[in-house]
Image (tube, rainbow, N blue to C red; front, top):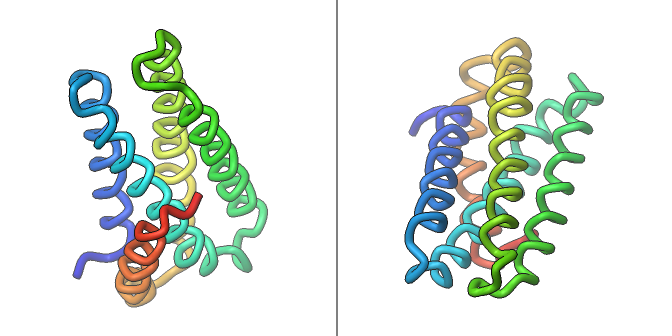
Length: 146
């Protein structure tokens, strides 16, 4: 199994692909919205339960910022889900949600958190976290924790 940072990066790529599909294919919006919510919610929950939990005592301020960003994304998802897919406000709201998510991925996680994880955790730690990450993600996705 790949180490946790690779799994997180793969999730980011999947979520970006879902955004692409939502933007380009109106016929599948209903299904893709459900998939995006499940994947994004499961991903955030699993990160918090594994990588963030493991780093929280080591770099508390940075991890607090990551938790705060997750909460902002949860709020953005809730606002977005209030808009019917056929409403003229839907596409702009999708774009705003995507911007928030992409900024978090690029700056906070793939930038700061990955660097902190590589500095403060061993390769064995990163590999050990990957199995728990997968389990937590599957559990959370089943109930779409937001």
